Image 1: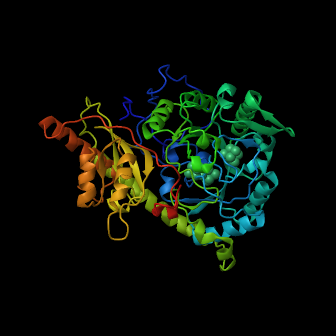
Image 2: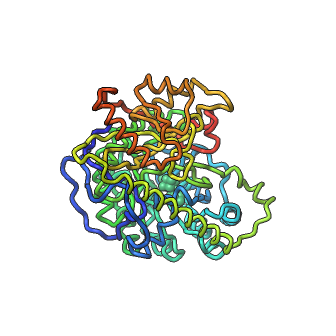
Image 3: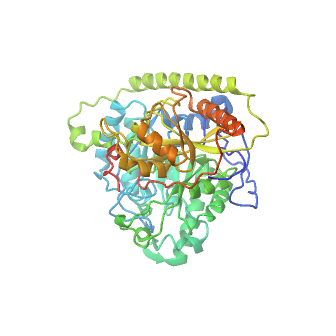
Length: 531
Ligand code: CLF
Ligand code: SF4
């Protein structure tokens, strides 16, 4: 398991938001495994609008990507109006979605701005907690400026309460910052995989810029210069920026620590380090040349090494360019053009706001209840206990242990010590329960996905998976049904420490875990659905 010695701030939660323009602190020279220690772990953090500038709170509180807590309550959608791209990434095949922002799968339907606006209004009517509209491909939003900005312009008029979000590779960004500001696009994601052209030429074979195709190191140099300039320009205008970086083992893994420093110094609000998705059947250069994606341990090591720099996002689902719904779910099939045409669409702003007010009350109640549960546990920890380990959690929401093992398509992973339990990521798995019976062939891949964990906290688990997990050294735990996750993890940890002390268990390190290729979609409940 990861041996990072200090608590990390795993994600941005309420109360962990820093204003823009904070000075750069030089990262410790020891690189991987170092940590900033700039704040408490997420567990036990209080939070709310009092903890940050009001204008930043307003921008992030309902954005599922910019606030880990918000993603349990609020949804986003993408409209695929941007098919063209102005660069080539070695992890992308033009026949597929942009791998930066989506799992490699063909976009179902490319949309005109007209169709896109109708779709957004339809979704907003049906899903009142949908608060953010993003344009994230399937190519590059700013390589298709007319369609992108026409969509934003119309939406500002027709659905003024929806936040606008844009994702770009950054090459054209400096040319469009004024336009982005004009349409009140609150959030911009730039995919920055390197700040050194020697690294960049291994990722980007060419760019198309100033009417010509440029290759090699020159191309990478122009790209990095444009990305960083665009970031600085957005920061100067107070537009929140998120940097996505694709972790490519052996190419940019340790270099991402430098990327993190570079983007933080330019005011980036959030850094999202994502695993490379690479399979030969995707037809990408990396897929065809056998470039692998990172293991779970490799991903966490780089993320941990960046802790203390720009705030880290760890709940990204690498969603499709036409995704609809909460992160981790995809309801796009409910909103095809045919189905939208048959809908009676009525955009009711009051109804949306009333619904969101109820969501907010529930969210605050959950937050307060969790805080009370954790406060009750405070002070029980042994201050000298520096052991840290990972647990997997089966949850269907509400921040509680409340899902059956067999129904899980995504485990949440928490790092737990005597003092804190922090969300550090998620692991997609194929469903074990297949309509009344357990699919034992799935078990090895599920074990592989959480193989770095010492325990799995579930609401219920059958005898067969229980035995297989135990044989693999992962303790199945169903003693905390309905408990808040952090409290359950801390209680289990205290119990585990007690059993080590009494000799009832022998503690040992865990191994690495595999990251399942491809993002979860609704269809992924069928094992065949995702490549
Ligand atoms: Fe979409 Fe991206 Fe906006 Fe979010 S996604 S354009 S910032 S609304 Fe979010 Fe999806 Fe990860 Fe992107 S989970 S891939 S980070
Ligand atoms: Fe593909 Fe996106 Fe890279 Fe363009 S920026 S090549 S669409 S991954």
